[in-house]
Length: 366
Ligand code: FAD
Ligand code: UDP
Image 1 (cartoon, rainbow, N blue to C red):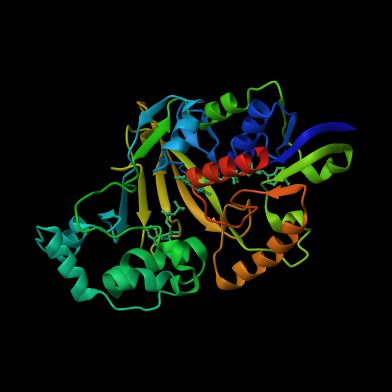
Image 2: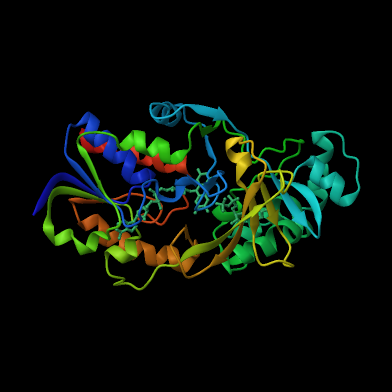
């Protein structure tokens, strides 16, 4: 029999932040069980055989408006400034995404100069959609059908295997529409990358005498042998309940990594292939993310799929309703806390899950 105060399932941001706080501030013994062979969850990075730092589960860009979250993480890492830039590849041409003044001018061969002119342009093409019910409405309401069709419709279908009209407005609503020529993907106050990578950050976070990490183990294989006072679960909620209300949809991705013997592959870290001439959604050139110099370059092609590890909650009305059944069950379990992107079926960014874990810790420690 093993014993601890807190048993935590999953060593991603949700599990690791809570473990760090509980171990260092409450001086309690924590065991983390992680089924993968590494810590860090989907933020995990590693050097490939060409010496390039790669994000194994897709690009993870740290951005937040929360000083609290930034200060918290800064205890475990130094930072390098990094502002993410994305181009859309539409029929072989590159356009800034989020859509901005430069996108409009290039696409429609216009020469709009001021933000006011761009706003007036959107007013001539946008369709009033009220109420905003889905991911098509949220974009068409701002920029009209043509821009929606070119930049959102096909990419979204490839990513989710669903039409935007079948997805919550919050999905495409993550992407702003701009009237200026700001080509940054995010405009948050704090935009940085951990200087030595995410895995090192996690190592720092978990290096506490009260924390024991067990890798390569599905918690269900050992749960009967562990005595604990509280459990924090960050894995998929439907798995926890043995799929009693059916499987929730999570979208996965197959990452195809390739190394090219050339210095750079593409003009920005990320290129989104927004038409349906290719099956992959986006191509990431990893060296940009850590500002690394190297003679060769490693890129990853993302092919979304249903099978495989769960990465994204699929936010349709039906899935959200099924999740609520699980959430109700979860609330009945007073000594088990559900926290995380998979456990709460929410499309959290890293900063949001860190904020959520810090808030949960505060509630626990009162
Ligand atoms: P996870 O990181 O998924 O961690 C959960 C852990 O639980 C995993 O390690 C898993 O192996 C483990 N686990 C699951 N089941 C079990 C089990 N039965 N037994 C033991 N362990 C188990 N956010 C940003 O802020 N910026 C970005 O640029 C960004 N890009 C992203 C790109 C992609 C492709 C994806 C998928 C996500 C991206 N995110 C990004 C979101 C970010 O990954 C999440 O917000 C964050 O990882 C959530 O942390 P978590 O701890 O909830 O989940
Ligand atoms: N999206 C799109 N075209 C783009 C970028 C995004 O249609 O060029 C849509 C797509 O549905 C995507 C969602 O907006 O899944 C959110 O995009 P984001 O870049 O935030 O996705 P993530 O990085 O989380 O995969």
